[in-house]
Image (cartoon, rainbow over the protein chains, first blue to last red):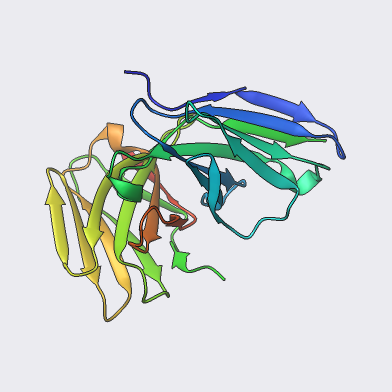
Length: 114
Length: 113
């Protein structure tokens, strides 16, 4: 049973560019959450998708947007990249009635903005 | 506003001894507290949780203690093993459906053989 997968593993972009990160949830999970982990910090909640809708959002600007597909996979898009967007982006999946206590994390995508 | 705090960035413990990781929080609305363990190049993995109505939860070598009046929780690992070397994150959540996890900044635990 594959766990949460994310692609790509690493990404290098320049300021002002746009980036799309992808996440496939664990089998049986229908909810996807995205987190940003800056160096030396804990993961910060970006938003959560359920039934293809953004259900909850953290304190991130509109440059951060997302999407969930009918197969529950998800994308995170970041526009007009800033140096401060350099971080590890983590995707977590949950669902099946277990709620957030059963969130499973992927290995993350390391984004570097130059 | 750091609602969950881990004031010790790092901790070194001798193999076989007890490791104690601490966490403080400020939001009284949190209903559950969780500990996650993270190895390099991997995502955080769930370790153990505790409900706010309890003061202790034990799972094998791992025990979490919650002191609500002090808004403090701790994770005890005994005996500590080399494979326990990792970054440990404390997280909190309000139990209203699939709520967001609020994480602390993490403590890097190193077990010395």
